[in-house]
Length: 204
Image (tube, rainbow, N blue to C red; front, side, top):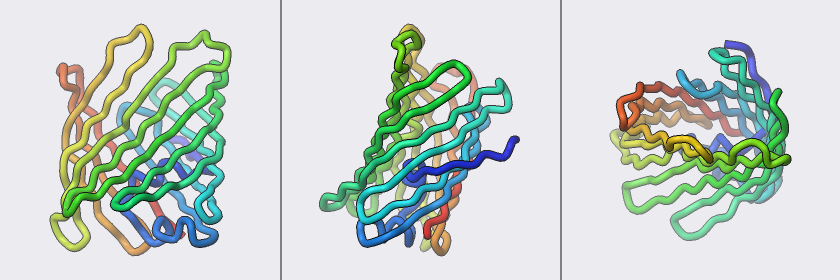
């Protein structure tokens, strides 16, 4: 896999709440996150924020088909009682053109259950490429030990003129000092295949 490097804060929400995430909104903060997927592009992101606002960007690459994407944008973190929402607007450049992207990453905690989602809507600037909506993934986890949590996860990928793909499976997360690491093991609902995803995030 090629080395990927970037500027971003969005994808870090896929990790368990950590020290840097808790400080968002109270000063300067940042993070680095890495994601490997046996089907989708792998990525490395880093982001820097001040109080509730942040600058973001990212680089993704799929060595199986040569797809590469460079992303940059801005966003903000909003908190309510028992929930946290990251929203950002970004622009992405690929070999096929440029795209606008909107991200929404909610985290909701109700007693022992934590629900997370990563929603991305992609629209081409020239309108010639089909719009895409992905939820990658939405998960429900509960603590299994002091550092380990686990539960279920679902991936949804939809595009204009194409069949919606849905995959379900298990998710496990391990909380580390100032960081988190996790894994998703998913299989397509219609039996088209399976996927394995590893993710890591470090906060500072």
